[in-house]
Image (cartoon, rainbow, N blue to C red; front, side, top):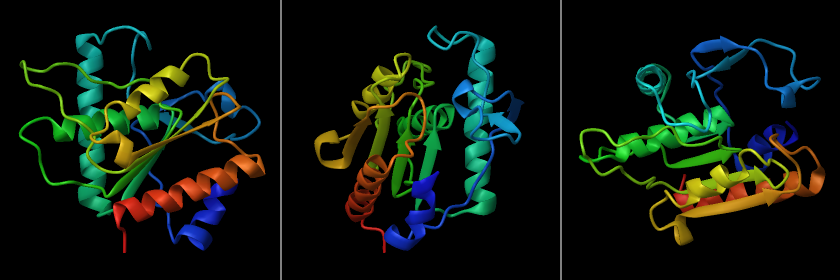
Length: 198
């Protein structure tokens, strides 16, 4: 991903990579781009349907996995995800803010091509909102998930001030063309400023 090599140089961001919990086949968008082992955070029987009890157990385990990564390998200023990684992080941030809200675990989040939010009403509680500054990036040609990606912005508290949405012309992929990468880098710099990361 071209922008990853520019993050350290232009935005002073160093990345720490973590895999999901479950081995899986790569998404078709990764064909020819990445040939290594792929992982997902959880399984979901119907990507667009309501969760089964098995789905709920899998997502809860994924959230616990994120808590474990923070505990064992953190702390981290921010978090970045793509596709189901963004979905898991969106759900995780909302879950973490569900009353009683707890101390913030990150200062910002970068969410690429979010494929839905794994959330559901638990025990009648009102679900939380994402309270940290966010940058959302999605492709207008991603017919399956573009609206879900945009919808996550609506789950951000004070979204007009804390959330930014960048929509590019491609599909369910991290953009590689120079103008879009430039726009993302500028968006990340603004995000870091909103998050007041020092």
